[in-house]
Length: 118
Figure (cartoon, rainbow, N blue to C red):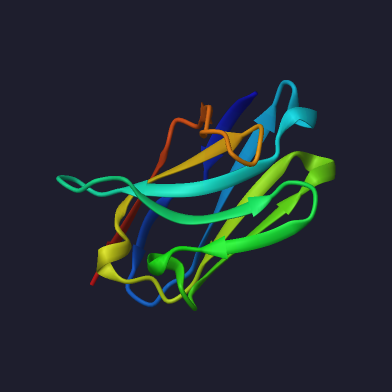
């Protein structure tokens, strides 16, 4: 499974942005996909994940109430709609995929930079 993240950019506080993650290869093996982010000098943190077959989104603290994860199975693409962006949302956003419920995320996209300015 290969992943390609896109959609990042420079926005202002309060703006919205939608990230995309296109999956290719053996996508039928995907169990769950997620978004993570990492800001300079900070550890990578969980943003949200979604089960590939049935949805079941789960959000981390950074996403609560502002972000929405979704996926289009027909297009093998996952999305992260980010609303009301804050300065602290600035980070490199990575998408990832795991192939089983208990497994680790084994495929990672290259990351897309989101920069929020005041």
